Image (cartoon, rainbow, N blue to C red):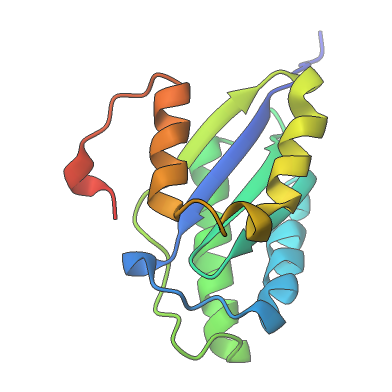
Length: 148
């Protein structure tokens, strides 16, 4: 029997110390690079976007790929690539953790629209406010001391 899955993830992680280092003029290059990493792992990319200090990824993982290994691969490869390409001069790395939230496939359109509208969304809400809202919405226990 074959393996069949349909798990829609939203993955969120920010820059180290939540520093505003992801300059608008080069973000699209970063998003395309991250998408290539995800596709190389045989995963599906639905949307990637972000602002100065964090990114959101909507993806479906191939059954052979663990969430933790995918996030690690994206962070490690993109950090090296950013530094080699000198895309974001003040970028020193990604935060140590990440958030991952699952959605039903019927929520894909709303999720991708939400991710596409990150710049608009963050005119009203900070990253920390957004992240805390996600954690609460998904009933995830968290320690405020570890939120930037």
